[in-house]
Length: 265
Image (cartoon, rainbow, N blue to C red):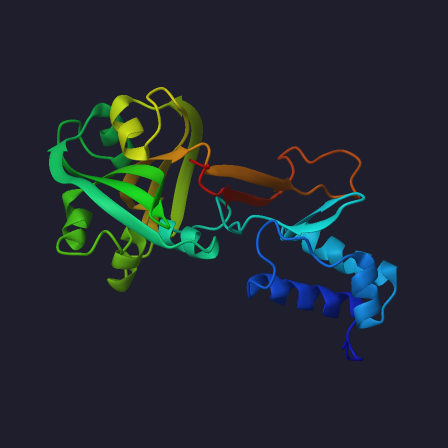
């Protein structure tokens, strides 16, 4: 039963949110109907609709007219607005993160890598390649370049379970800024093999330069996502009090990945 003191629609949305978070209602499950919720909690249909609208705006549910309300696939409220690592992304999506290290060795910096890291072309850098897994299913393939100074802190670490972020943060080297570029690419033979997709499959490539304090570049990374496992959702906000959009554009409220279930075999 709902208690006095707080708006009833807020209490109802809190209850539904808790049921979803605890797994009582799982992704794609249908929630009780408006009539059922109204009768169970002794509130009006308007109150129920307001509670459901709140959850819909939060991205927890979606509603089909004439059918009902359903729980959305678990997704992550961070993306490119909040700076997180792969393990944090997976945890928020309800998936177990694991990485498989397939390469960790020095090499000469190409012109592109040198420019991103701010070093001379041909200088020694360390390349780390990892297959990123969610619940043991391939989701992404990473290729990361670091200078020897930062790479030394990864030696002897369990890079299958620990992330670069977490390792460096324990050494008081926080990642405080990330510069991103997103593009659509086709999988080359090596990447396709790791991600278990046909060569030429469309992938989502995200280039990221991660920096610590004073704009010091820690690493440059290319991440290749399976396009059947992730999409990005974008939310912009417009100031309704202004008739003309500001010159700098609408403020970005959310830009977050939604991880999809593995395709059926």
